[in-house]
Image 1 (spheres, rainbow, N blue to C red):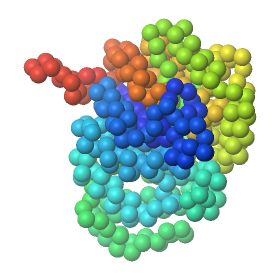
Image 2 (cartoon, rainbow, N blue to C red):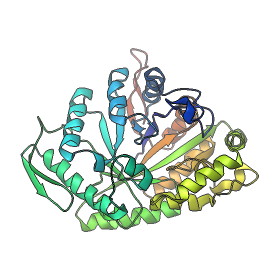
Image 3 (spheres, one colour):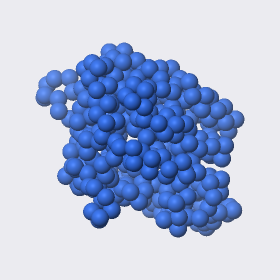
Image 4 (tube, helix red, strand yellow):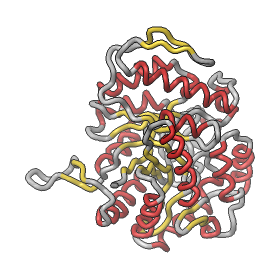
Length: 384
């Protein structure tokens, strides 16, 4: 089985360190070197398309721009690239979400993917007016996705649950194709929902053995429900021509952090109700160590990103061949999709796309897809 590669749109801004973020109100903190304006995001999207990535994940939260509006604005900036739009099912009507996804699918020519973010941070959820506890949020997500799929059936749909109720829910037309659902969550409440609804179950980048264990649980639950689920992993990447160069870059990212930043971030992350986030924190224990290699938790898997960043906290670090080796290891564990990012996102897309992707292609892990820059008359394909 070949793998699919996705990149990331930095809709909170971008820069050469982990902690830079864009703030519309500069009094809230330092601004990123590169604000998340349409021109820069367009550069990243076009680069991802040019380099053969399948799609780009666009995050959701109060710390970034809205994913729906941002990706809709980028449709005309690209021709093949898909948009993995993250959104929170608890703060939008399921019928409206089904309608928005169907509209996006038609206007983009079938280029929307949906990332369901149930949410694990109580503070963040309450900013959106959501006061459900952790398990209730997943129960509501279960109902939400049942309604969305019902609306996409093309016939009026009725549903009455403990959290949501609709009558005659429908839209202008069913999307064609139906957008794949990407879903993450590590808790006991999350896994059955993933098994019932996810097309792709996403996990953050724990070591391959831990990822394999989680995949096994979801696969077993999905089989019991008569379904087949694909699996993906969310990671950062620092790819260079040599291993030494890659680890030197990781060291630069670590050296740019100060103890106060790490302590503040770890205090916030420790308060998260997300099981997945707690698993990320456990990988490094909140301690930076004296060198980047102190945070190498598996060969060429680095936990330094998670010292100050919530969510995905690990990175593939090494030469192009070493990173390809680790991707092969994840693939052997059952992972077929990789959602990647790096600092800055524009340059790191090229490091990975021009270095690691050819290595994966040589190993037979990538299928071929059209590319937009081929010379007329030449073979217009690239590995994907």
